[in-house]
Image (tube, rainbow, N blue to C red; front, side):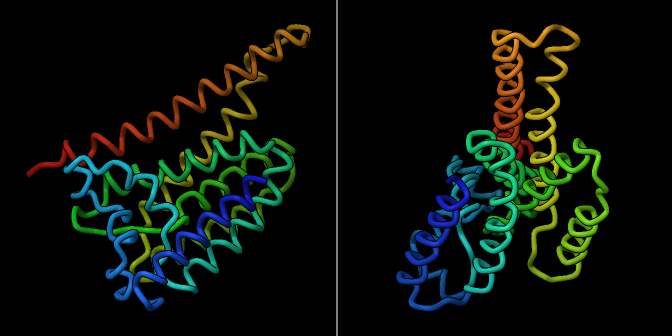
Length: 227
């Protein structure tokens, strides 16, 4: 149910920002306190406003923006969540979200404000690619979707390419950890219940390390920028 819960949270946050601003345009949302206090700008992180690494992933600039992202989340989520399980799916989503924010904090301009669930959604695209490869299915369609979206990220003004790439990278790595670490941990041993539990715990430790690493990069990167 994580997919539907995430869609609901995004929709509620959008409705609150819309109501506060009184309009659905980007400039109208500047009048929304929730929007202003939740977008991600590297300069804000210097002032220790670290919650923006998370909250920016639940903001959207327009009705079209949230519609495209939520349709993508619905399509990917309803395919991936049953395969991965709700807990692992949610972990991969959050790791992708923070991975996108980390890339913005590290590479985007200090005064560049970003918002949207796109980083997390790109992470789900990476997760789909890992699953397809693990199943030894042809990856061409998934690669084509990722490539098309990256071309759009480059060609359309105002889209955060670094945020998308960060989400894609961390989502891919988190899915690799979820699916391949247990196999590596068990090796050729007889798969007993205790061994499966230890292997699963190993995967969760790696995923937690990736999530923690993304958060850490987001926190320290603005502090390391040359002034």
